[in-house]
Amino acid sequence: MLLSAFFTFMSTGILLYYITRWHIEIRHFSNFLNAAGFVTFTVMATIACGASAFSIRYLPAQFVMAIGTVAALVAGILLATVPAHQTYWPQEFPALFILGFSPDFIFTAAQIITSNSVKRRLQGVAGSLVGTVQLYGLSTGLGFAGTIERYTNKNGGDPIGGIRHALWFSVALAGVATLVCVIIRIPKDEREGWDEDEEQPHA
Image (cartoon, rainbow, N blue to C red; front, side, top):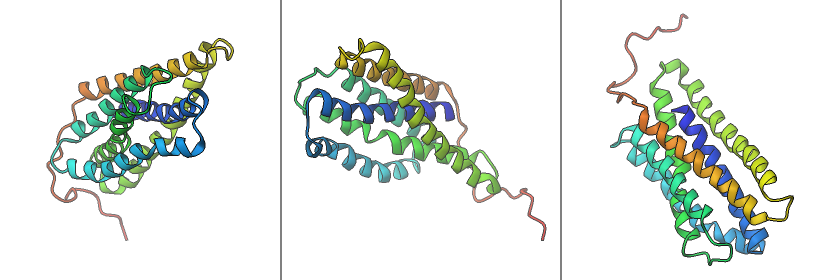
């Protein structure tokens, strides 16, 4: 589960960074237009915060996590195949619409799974572990993607090709995350309240 979350956060970080690069360097957007382009993602990510919390009550955490990985995968494919000077609406708009569901669904599911996997006294550590995975995923993904871009842009002569290769790397990461999420089997937690046999701290 942590591996799937790590790869998805890597993919999401790459997509968000290289969308900005695409706006500014390829389409020559102003800072204002670049920010306006992310309104779709901002709105959908805000909605996804509540939707993920609602979904986790009715769906197994594994399914909620799968929604997040598939969202990153589909958004990555749309962005990696977008023509250089295509308008915002045909592919980038739906990609950002879908991508908004990825980070929150992954984070919510990962928090639930890790918290249910340990005793009460270790749940704070488990939650911190998910936060660490998120931060390391975002930074590590950009490191690998930057290296790929550097060695595939023909020494700066093909900026579109370099960015596109980095985006395809994010697609590969999301694909592996989805595969891992499909393979793993996480038992549903049927407990009510805390474990009765948990050791109580001594006074």
